[in-house]
Image (tube, rainbow, N blue to C red):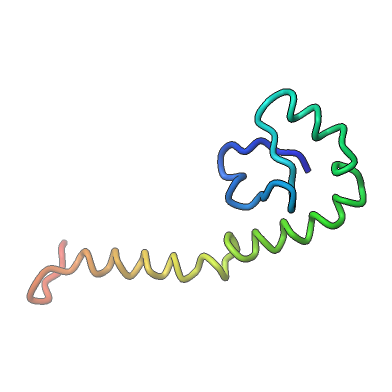
Length: 86
């Protein structure tokens, strides 16, 4: 896979492991022409990409983050003395 390193891509695409990142026209051309872009590398890169996504972006990975966020919102709505904001 060849991708731009823009947006969220750098969070789950690692250059040379599960993707080839290209910022310039020359990089795009070079990466698309290399053997690394062939079928053999695509098959080996896919598990790496899936592993990266599962470890950082899956529901299992993000549910503790969501739980902490919800907990902090609940705590922030409480006032001293047990009163709650209306």
